[in-house]
Image (cartoon, rainbow over the protein chains, first blue to last red):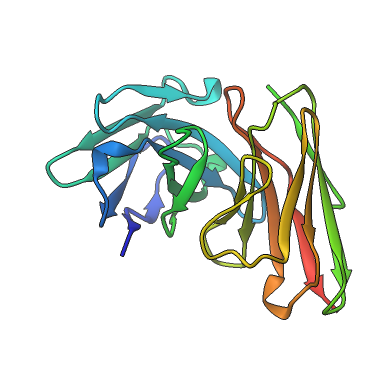
Length: 120
Length: 107
């Protein structure tokens, strides 16, 4: 079954870092970009950036530059999102989503999400 | 950044009703517009891409139209399983931006 399975949910202290993983199954990992989108409690969707799993190239929304790192491990088909210097307003569900093969900026498959709560 | 304005923000309709949701872009985005459905506690689900193309497995009662700055999602005959929040997504220009969502409730 084609899917993205996420892990890394949890509670983090302000100022700490968090890392969420996104493992691709049943498709060639390097064929599609992977995007990251977050959703604060009760709020809408906010695009954060993408990684090209084939080359490792990345692109981020301006507001996340400097705190946001995307990496991937092609041997395991897993992408990673790390956010540093966490603040309370980073509390959100973090989704990975696959870019469509025909248009990598569109999204055609979502992971189940990982809830990260930033609280002391 | 391109602002995506959805209307209405919420609606309540009966099974069998025709429902229309509008998404307006603050500048032209050609046909780089998609719709996603999200149910409470779940990840979003892609419904429509490139304005009017149904994602695999999406019922034909869903349709989309528009170009440039104004887009619509129509559900021709609302079904009980169509409850949830619908988001438009522009992927023409970075940063990608979503509309604020339209919450659909079944009367």
